[in-house]
Amino acid sequence: MKMILRWGLALTVLAIILVTNAQAGDPIAAWNQISENAVKAGKHPLPVTSVEFAIVQLAIYDAVESIDRRYVPYYTRVPGATGSLSAAAAKAGHDTLVGLFPAQSAALDAAYADFLATNGVDPLDPGTAVGAQAAANILALRANDGRFPPNPPPFLGGTAIGDLTTSSGTNSFAGANSAYQFEASVLG
Picture 1 (cartoon, rainbow, N blue to C red):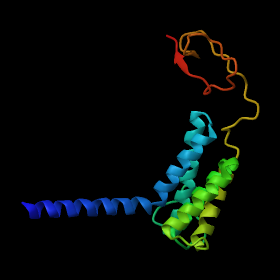
Picture 2 (picture 1 turned 45 degrees about the vertical axis):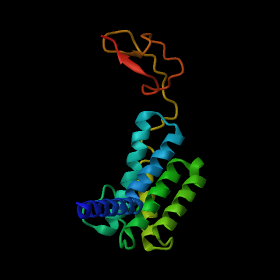
Picture 3 (picture 1 turned 180 degrees about the horizontal axis):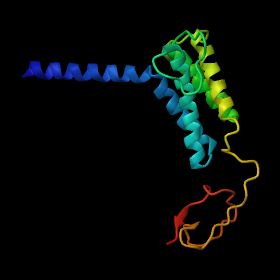
Picture 4 (picture 1 turned 90 degrees about the vertical axis):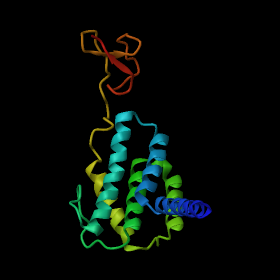
């Protein structure tokens, strides 16, 4: 019985160590967490935050896929891509977030440096150039996608069945400059 408990405890400790190491070295999970923090700090409305997450993940995907070449890239494949997949993913995540949230560049630079140091990734690895190019390509693709219209018309709502209204039941949308910047319910 003692032998079974010892082996069970040893296997549990080993499993915890392996899971911890796998999470520490996963650039996708790391940059997803960093993205979550940056998006929250950016305080953009909900539909926009979903797009911002997607933009970061697409840049990372295209960077990794440019080197790995197992699947079709989303937008672009960086020609002649070589290097570390972790370096490419980290640089793509970093540069995309800096492009989306330039006011957070100091914090994002620190997160990038910390990721490289923690995971033993060389900042001069050729994968970083691949990540930078993938990020630039996705940011250029999404530059004028309408997330932030320059002069959105005021949304005034309505009172007919199916019209959106505020959660208080009124149709006063003072201060709301688009359909997604208020809580809404459907009349009916």
